Image (cartoon, rainbow, N blue to C red; front, side):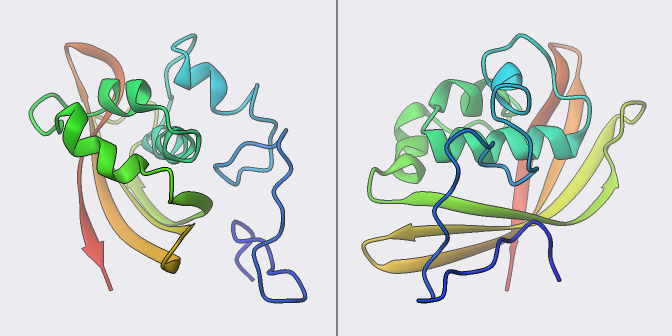
Length: 150
């Protein structure tokens, strides 16, 4: 069973998230999990940690972290990003499926994940294989881009 994806409620809906827990699905409290990365008091140590913080930024509608953690050569404009932060779309769950490199001593990494959102059109599933790297202008990891799968 996938431990990053909580079971659905008896009626088939998503379970109500505990507001103290981090949206990234780690099971840790937001204030010690992704919040320090979002506010810049610590850097993500791994590509997966940055991926989790970026999911949390989508869930909390934090464009500042998303833009700051995007590789400058691939970063969208604020306007382009705003479509992903639509008030109608609620990012609910994240499951990390695979990682390649992306550790504290690596220069590049790949994280494959599935993210689940709900909106007026119903449930949305996003399966992506994302590339990350370290760059001289940024002390931690940055998101380059992703390839959508299925």
